[in-house]
Image (cartoon, rainbow, N blue to C red; front, top):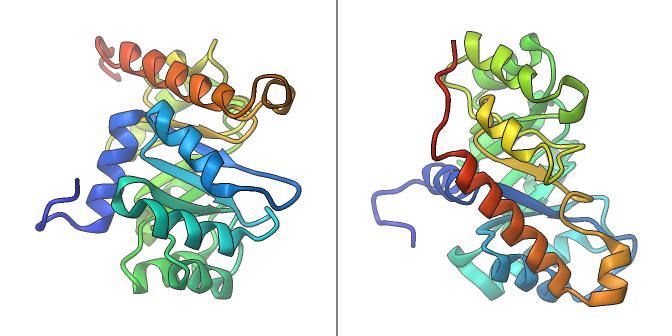
Length: 226
């Protein structure tokens, strides 16, 4: 639970780091968003993302936020403009996420004291995201640089909170953490629609729990970044 002296930014960062995952709901048509959120919550997630490309995204963010309160924080992914960022905040979103550094989106988030996970890739983009006030920097696409790229970034920006997204799998998640990431993110990473069709939403719960276990184990003996 969020303490009285804990800011939203501090709470979001702590919850994301403690689980090590930011699973994303990305659908092609409207569905029971509460059920998807519940499946992720049951797996251990405490911060989840709904992409703004999902039909009814604002409705989903508001519904999940009202249903779970501080028990499950909702991020709005792929937020590409200031107007959308403001709408997310007005609909109960607790985090703004974008795939790249977008100054006016970061400005809106900071104006409303809502944490932002800004997308970036190059060292210059990571620095700009940090300088603008990003709570975490989402390295996208994560698979392009690979796990060791996290180490390269942490060597020059030791204070940055890196959360790679795109191409993160159960096979490489531990490597990303050991190389400097504090959590991992993704949509396809956590939502396999073939499995969902065959096994139901419990497959999401199992996948989230699997990643949390992998990341918890990886964090036990972290190497020192040079």
